Image 1 (tube, rainbow, N blue to C red):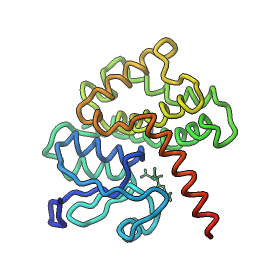
Image 2 (image 1 turned 30 degrees about the vertical axis):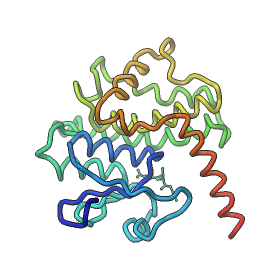
Image 3 (image 1 turned 90 degrees about the vertical axis):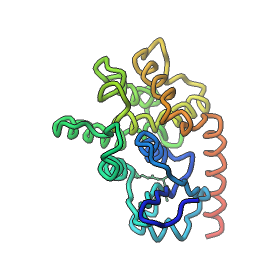
Amino acid sequence: MASDDAAAVRVVGGWASPFVMRVCVALRLKGVAYELLQEEPGKKSELLLKSNPVHKQIPVLLHGGRPVCESLVILQYVDEAFAGARPRILPADPYDRAVHRFWAEYADAKLPTALRTLRGMIDGDKAEAAEQLAFAACSKGQRFFAGDDIGFLDIVLGSYVGWFRAAERITAQRVLDEKRTPRLAAWVARLCGHEAVRDVMPDAGRLVEFGEALRAALAANAQRM
Ligand SMILES: N[C@@H](CCC(=O)N[C@@H](CS)C(=O)NCC(=O)O)C(=O)O
């Protein structure tokens, strides 16, 4: 087990969280060994509350015991803290970096709502919500957004793939359709086959069960209050 020495890398998180998955993919990409500390669904550990007192959310990266919060900030931190390890996560060119950050923030502003709409948790246009991930197909014909290997934008967008697949199961509606959006489907296949992603991409069936269990746990907590 990793200890709190200066090099120890730990992730306070949970296997089902897309935001946690991003951090795991980034660390795997860089070849950094880490320990995942699983939070219990619907609860918050003392370590989480102490490490992320502002948002009280997962993921938190603990590097030598020092916390870094917010997945997009963590990805950039991992890229800089392990700069010697290839590949780069963010593009080398400042303009490209800015563009990738812009689309990552756009994705985080749109996709969680699209997912909730698809799953019927909030009202909205389901067909439009299903299209939201399609801009992942705009990778200019390259294998990945920044070229031959996965990078910042692939990690950010890719973290939603598991939950889009879970939404497909819940609603029996295809979102990642090879015929309608072949470039998106091909990108998803390449991403899911990548060695840094393969073992941390959650199974859609397990996510559906997790979603139901979490909803029940949160309802039970609310009744107790
Ligand atoms: N903007 C945050 C979002 C993190 C987030 O929403 N985490 C969820 C798990 S997927 C969480 O901790 N939810 C519990 C809560 O909000 O109380 C990030 O990118 O890290």
